[in-house]
Length: 276
Image (cartoon, rainbow, N blue to C red; front, top):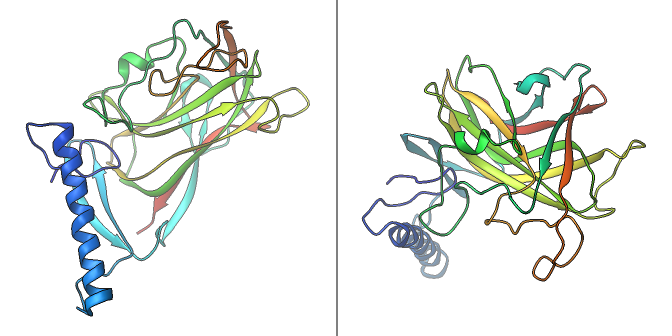
C-alpha cells in the first residue's frame, strides 16, 4: 500500500486514478462486510476493534497504520504556530510589524497545485513554483528539532484586509524537506461575503479557515510552511470580487489584500499535535 496524497491510502498501479478509487472502495467494502458479519451474524471479532483507522504519513516514506478509539483521537494537544514578519513561522506571538500585501487578479488567478481532487493531479506536489508567485504569501518555520506528528482537524485564523468585500482566503500547510521541496499536506478555503465574519474597528477581518483533517508526521530537520493566497483555480472557482454570480458574472475586480501579524492580530495555524 502506498499513499499518493496526505489524507488517502491507495494501491499503486498503472491505471493511476482508477486504481486509487478501486483500492479505497475495496478497503471500505472489507470493513463494511466485517461490521455486518459481527452485528448481524454475531461473529465476534469480524469488525475491527478501533472506531477509527488512520494512516500516519510522511511524504516519501511508507505510512504507519494506527487505530484510534475516537476522532479526533485522545492525546492530541493544539499548538499554535504564528505568522511572523519576514515570512517566518513560530510558536512565539508575533512582534509589532507591518502587514504583508499582495494583489489578487481574477484575470490571472492563483493556480491550484495538487490537493484533494479527482484525477492524476491530486495529492502532494512540489509547491515551489506556486510559492514564487507574487500573489502567494509564505511563512516558514525553522528546521524541526524533533519529529512532529499531527493527527486530526487543522484550522487557521487569519487577520485579513481586502479592498473588496467579496474575496477568498486560502490557507495551505506544507512540509519543506531538507532539499527545499515544499510538499502540500492539507489546505482549506473560506469565501468571504459582506458580514460573513467579524471585523474590527479598522475593518480587519478575523477569518477562520478549516483545513482538511490529516494524519502526518513531519520528521526532524524538516520545516513547516504556511501559504496564504486568495485563489486556487480551477479547483475552486475564481472569485470575481464583485459579488456577481460566479457562473454568469462579467466584471472582475483586482483585490488588494493584506495579511496581518502583530500582537493585536496574531494570525496563526493551529495543529493537533499527538503527544507521546
